[in-house]
Image (cartoon, rainbow, N blue to C red; front, top):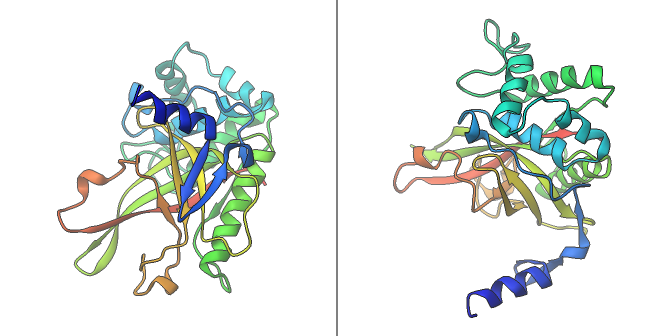
Length: 266
């Protein structure tokens, strides 16, 4: 009973808590089909997070986007992901000369977007686009947070859960260095973002294991990819369940997850 009670309270209240504030479940904007099955990249390959995140997005999208998932023949993740990789991932990369889009290192944002739109064309589906999540000229951290929220909000409103490209960074020998990247699928964010907000909660699907997770996108309160917090050019992805790149972090090293790009419709 003592173990069950917290679960019941969590489910019934549906709260995200941080710094004394709360976002109720009814105040969240969810994917059209939030119960869609998360695709598990481990069913086929540890470097298939891009195709798996895309498949999860289709499954959790509206009826139009669910057609994309249905177009991939196969009765399980392994078969559907394998079909996508063979048909679209093994074509020549548009950004890396002499390589295929999908390799042992996975797939980059540009190639994933190109491959997705290639798949969409015969299905008469809309075009996906992407946006970099680093501060632009004249932006502050709070402005970047709001731009990020707007991109996620617009894509969810248009029926296609957006993908986030995140990357683990480590502070090594006095310099921030990228370690490993990953794609996740965002399925819920706050329906509104308060003026001057420094963080907001997200629900996302992690294709590493095909699991639903919760986390926060935040304006860094400590230096991240910069000498001071005020100069940080990026946001912080506070995703406690994300294991991407953790094995490559050495003892005593400072590490953080940085959201680099969002893919969706807006």
